[in-house]
Amino acid sequence: MSTGKKLLKRCLLGAPLGLAISTVITIVISICVGDGMYYAVVPELIADSGSEINAVVIQAVLSLIYGAAWAGASVVWESDGWSLLKQTVVHLLVCSAATFPIAYFARWMPHNAKGIALYFGIFVAIYLVVWLSQYSAMKKRVKQINEKLQKSA
Image 1: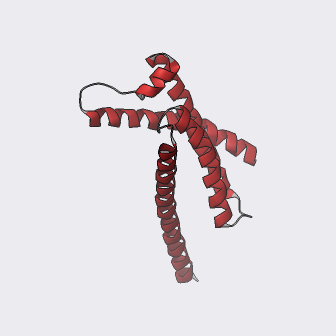
Image 2: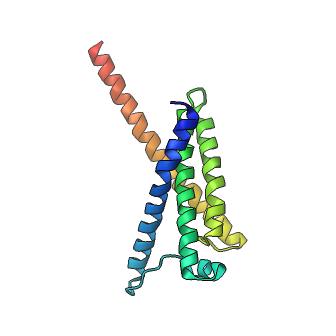
């Protein structure tokens, strides 16, 4: 399968996943607030878009794009000619470039320097934790495969 087809397939699969994750997050937030109300979007997005339904539609579309971008970016990990460092930097840049404008427009962060800095700090910290856990798991799998190969040789 060509890279373009893989990219399109992953984006199409990632879009509904992004929407599903976004919806689960709003449910968890609403449960944590604990007042029996459902908080689908932040009040600032409602104010920006003129109504709650407009805000929900905007957030849904942005969540679809968010999921598609992250899923599509995963093709970077299959670039065999690239070093792990290059793959990581390109993946981080692509995901950051897709994520920041969506988070900003959806009002998932305050629109000031402190809010943007905090957003990027949290984003990079989460990215680093996920990357390290994936790297450790992959390293462990490679070690197990090598041990099996040595036993069978």
